[in-house]
Length: 332
Ligand code: CP
Image 1 (cartoon, rainbow, N blue to C red):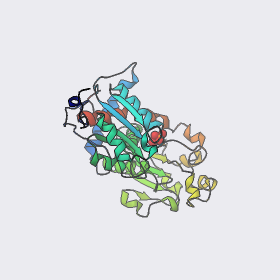
Image 2: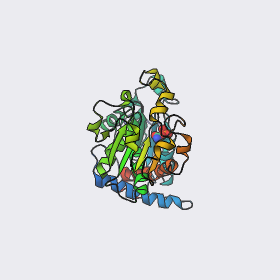
Image 3: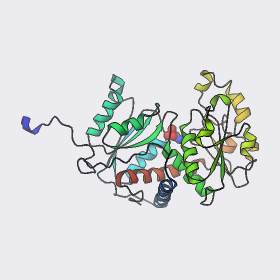
Image 4: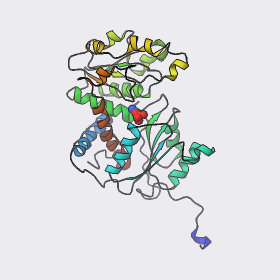
């Protein structure tokens, strides 16, 4: 090959979908500080995608030419698969990668790996990482849109949006005056943080309860009320959210035993009955059945847990469309 045809410079980032140098770099790092209008815009768009997805064979080519990189450095079922499906449904191409199967395992830095991927004209990076702050860091250093798919104990904004979407349906379209009890490991939960920020923005109120050792010192500064007993938090609530208890919390000395946790904080049929008659139970998954939630609650009449998962696909369509075009409804 003629040396003159070989350029040492990387390909312009984002050139697959955007003109060179024109990547708008719209990021979704968290729900903290987001406006009510922005959140409702995404939820309304997601409702349109849900309608499209409820019919047969829906596929759009609105994101044709867009390349998405799903960078999952932590395991995921719901988030990873729904992003992949959303990308395909909207005509984007995608690659999925993580710790294994990439040169991260040979000691390449995260940033070098991500620069490598973006230099191959990846326009949007969906990133999950066990360290809080990784998506914000990448947003500063990559010429691509970044979507946070869960970073440490910081945020999981698309989970927050799908929780809000599910609750808005259960609450007949209105957040104002509604109250949810979030139960469990608040300290390590990015899901709880995104839900609290999102629910605050749209006007619902949040109670939190759980073991003292799994509660942040200044939890109420997030925008919620700490209630010491689960029964009091659930009494007359409009919804309950169970959170996954991570077994390693026992090894960390933060929990005496799972049995003790279940007795004091588990979502049982008796406890869930304390809520309003039409109140619902949500859980981000994966669930520890028989630990933080009893199987007869997870599969019971109040549970909308698998409906949440379905809403996740619609929410991720809206977020990808917004990142790519600035219009969350662009592919609807
Ligand atoms: N709720 C959630 O983030 O689930 P996954 O870890 O399966 O993506």
